[in-house]
Amino acid sequence: MISVSEALARVLALAAPLPTEAVPLADAAGRVLAEDAVATRAQPPFDASAMDGYALRGAEVAAGASFDVIGEAAAGAGFSGTLGAGQAVRIFTGAPVPEGADHVVIQEDVARDGDRITLLPTLGQGTNIRPKGGDFGAGDRVTAPRRLRPSDLALIAAMNVATLTVIRRPEVAIIGTGDELVMPGTAPGPDQIVASNLFGLKAMIEAEGGRARLLPIARDTNASLKATFALAEGADLVVTIGGASVGEHDLVAGVAQSLGVEMAFHKVAMRPGKPLMSGRMGKTAMLGLPGNPVSALVCGKVFLMPMLRAMQGLPDPIAAPLTATLGTDLPANGPRAHYMRARLVDGTITPFDRQDSSLLSILSEANALLIRQPADGPITRGRDVPYLPL
Image (cartoon, rainbow, N blue to C red; front, side, top):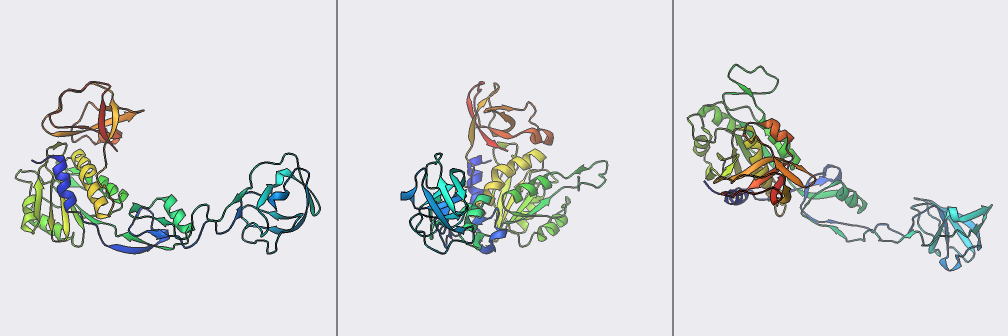
């Protein structure tokens, strides 16, 4: 067995960044930007009014001063003339400030009579003008790499950039294995269970920016496994679930090697998740997850998610653990790292009493994985402990 850190290093060595592609801005949500987006204009592109009111010369602004209103400026329809002494232009939020003006008095501080206005004693402070380029200038950048959030897309749209260069989404083929499995919605036989890991992992992959393909469940024969592996052709990563241990029905490692997979490791010193393996077949990486539902999903969190982040060119793909205050005493840990399902509330983390790797209900209630290091001694309530959020 190898350590979790060594296993992480080996799976990341299999996960080189994928090629880039150009996508329309409207399709870029959640994608990883591969090349900087460069603003083609400033924002705002002109001095703009921040309020509804009247544009004036700042030197003339004083309570009781009166002005002739000579025109109007609205968003998308500016005033084309030049403001002179003693003159004002009615202006609305977002409109360009007319030439000759450098101050906007809000409409609440003005009394108007026909085309004549008088500034009231309630006159406020500030010019109420958003300066040209106050948000960003032409040539400013949204830098790569980064996963594009809604706020990034809004900014890039304002920069007048319509197409982005992003990393291609990783194509992930998921293979469930075992004679005991049937798909949800079917009638299990007396000795069968419903496949669950497939759907949790598919959601995990897609949330991390990948495309997941659910392949037919492979039965516990070499022929069935080989046939299902063939359906994974073209995938960047093949994820198998189950069959990774050493029992007579655990065939995945042998079949994978017979198909040319070069193993990077087999078994890691962690719980849940000891029977984990990975390797490469040509350009395709492989990750073999344990069959127990919790083991598969915890290993997906610890190993699969960093692989997907690395394939998308994100720096620091391994999520750094956070810390919280332990809410209960814990006994000494065994020789393997233990990722304990836990509940985090107001900065205090408490592991569930039951940690069996078959208990999906506990995993569903958990919002954190408390990390125990191998051979860690007893720890008392109130200590800071590391965890991964779920």
